[in-house]
Amino acid sequence: MNPLKTLTAAAVLLLAASGLAQAGAALNAIKERGFIKCGVSDGLPGFSYADEKGNYNGIDVDVCRAVAAAVFGDAGKVKFTPLTAKERLTALQSGEIDVLSRNTTWTSSRDSAQGMNFTGVTYYDGQGFLVNKKLGVKSAKQLDGATVCVQAGTTTELNLSDYFRANKMKLTPISYDKSDESAKSLEAGRCDVLTSDQSQLYAQRIKLAKPDEYVVLPEVISKEPLGPVVRHGDDDWFDIVKWTLFVMVNAEDLGVNSKNVEEMKKSANPDVKRLLGVEGDKGKDFGLANDWMAAVIKQVGNYGEVFERNVGQGSPLKIQRGLNALWSQGGLQYAPPVR
Image (cartoon, rainbow, N blue to C red; front, side, top):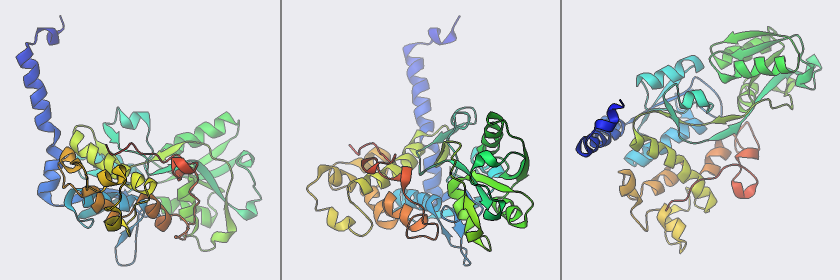
């Protein structure tokens, strides 16, 4: 007999109420603590990188600052924890961090069996290969028998094996815990090629002593949607992190940026009014201040601003928007409406 069928209506309501009571536990704990614990990369230019003064910069860093602006009205109320690829998921599962914003690929197993909720895509990426030009290789199809440096604990390892097997090529993989270690091994000649997400390859290349001697091959061998992650079990917190990213995308779509927020509050566009808290009560929906979306944009910027200063034309990486352009400009960045 299915025991659920024997539950009275009152018991069902009691169970539902109990679930709702637990729903805001993570968010309440964060508010009481007074800052957000954010897990980031252990050093990847453009995504998460600490300067000589210990100040963190990058797309992943800005996501966490935006969430802090949403919750506290202050983008500075966040503590960053640098994590290797092997450490990152455990740190989130154990509660060491509140949110993982560390160039992490959204996959079915992570989104289900490993107890995580991906909140959106901050960067659409794909795995590629970085080689020294003197190797004379123009295509990944020429890498048969190559020694390949790869970061341990990533989807990259499986993609690498699948690609070589599918193309009937042999390889010798060498795994490293840290991305910097794998890049240094390529530079020292201990491997023929370095494989990772293409964004990471561009970031590692600029850290090499002679970056112009290295080239990213044209093949993209996987889909790597990278985005922030929270634990299962608290929809209130999940909604805030998810909609913080959506707010930044919607802001760019509507022409709202960090410099014109106050002026745009006078806009006659209802979508802009709702976004900036001039119309409606979208703060109440999330348990936040009514102008929390405006705070995110003013203090951190819209998605386009975040992209350009960290990895785009305003950065040393100078990566084209490509798939990360807005949907209206041929890209994949698209956010549900604030309504």
